[in-house]
Length: 202
Image 1: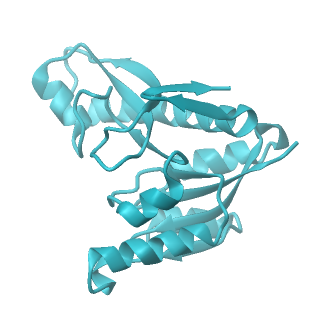
Image 2 (image 1 turned 90 degrees about the vertical axis):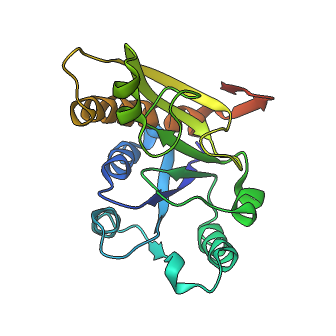
C-alpha cells in the first residue's frame, strides 16, 4: 500500500500532531508524518516531532523583510518534504498566495467551530456569546479567505447551559482531534475529489 506523506504545521502544544503521530504508527493507517513546520521556536509541538524522529523546520515571520518573503521560504521548506497532504494543526499563521498556489487542494486545516459560523480565532467564545445550542469542529481545505475553503468534515458538540469558553473549547478539542485523525487517514487511504464546494472522500 502506498503511504501518504504528511507535513503537519504547528504553533503550540502539538496535541493534534501527537494524535496523528500515534495513528501513523499503525501501517494500516496509510500515512506517515515526514515533516513538522512551525512559525516559532521552543514550542512543545516541535519537541513532540523531534522525540518521534520527524524532521522539523521553523520560519518566523519577524525574521523576514516582508510577509511575501516568509511565505516563499515557508513554501520551499514545506515542499522539500514532498508532502501529499499539508495539515494545519493549531497553526496560527495565514499562508500567502505562493503557498496556496503550491499546495492548493492539498492543504487542510481544522477549525474549532461549525463553519461558516464563527470563523477566525475565537470560535468557542463566539459560539457561547451567541447562545447557539450546537458548536463543533470543521476540517476544511484552505483557500485565500479566512476559514472559507471547501468543507471536508464536521462534528457537532452540544453547548451546555453552564458552558464557558474554556469548557466548550476542551470538549471541541477532543471531538476535533478524533475527526482530524479519522479523515486524514481516510484521505490518505482512499483519496478525495472536490466538486465546487463539495468534497467527497473516497
